[in-house]
Image 1: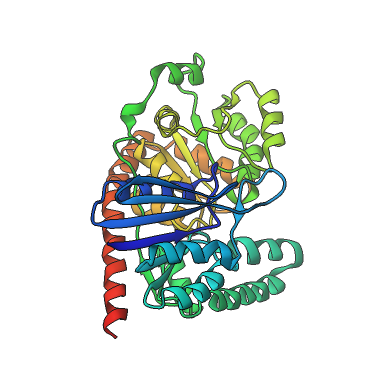
Image 2: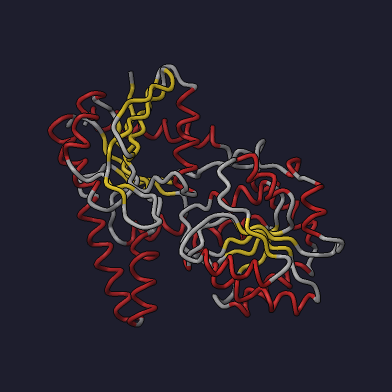
Length: 395
């Protein structure tokens, strides 16, 4: 049986886009009978979970980072070798760039030398986690140097890989420019039946509007960190209220380093709410469909699954000026691009969007999201797997 094994240290039980990608991928392969997908999940203990003929989850005991992080780290050959020996896969996908690609490559070379090695570029780490913070702290020159070092490191990690999958055209061009292995564009998907305007909950809408039908409603279900723009939103909120003459209803959902600031804002402002971490997809869709506006403030998204889910529910968008957020907003006509990364610019963008033809923007969002399908995504990906495997086998 054609077998695919996925390793990814970016998996987290409370994760966002990476978690959703793997959950949807598992759901797809759970229905397959002629292909086997094995997801290797970093966990607190080691055991096998046979979900169906087409899906197995191999839980592997792995080190958990201290603090509030829920990430675990596989890095030892002894964690990798038993999986590859057991399944002898044709395809190995590695979704995280730190150490794991090299470890998997070296083990695979001995155990399954005929297998193809692919990565999925879930995080544009040379930009997001290296250049940006170094630039912020030490200036532009050191930031550019740090980015070059990070791309050099990426080339070492993915040396001899057969390709890298990406979901953002801007990122694909950047990888090619920095001489990474051949990039393959795989647009991800959206469950447009689950994420739909039909999930609108009128009771929740009335609660958020609180007697003011014109009140703007916003849902922010992203990690509470600088990358996602949480500090911009908290800073912009009083400015928006002043410009509109009415406090927007703002619902936060999730967790992260800025949780104390979110809790403080909830205490300070009547119309800011914290819904906790929402693990239910149905509940997430209900919240999306019951508000007016989504915020895609990270300029470093490699696809932006949450953006597409928000759009599928009929939310107009404020999008960052770079990355997948910009691509989605510009291609859909569903919102406004954030011109500067400041609270003042965000407040201006939100007010501009509110005073535009908001109904048309919301309709554009839904129409655009309907073009994406998880089923099409994984069929396309499986075709790519087989194509590259056959090319390698015949070469």
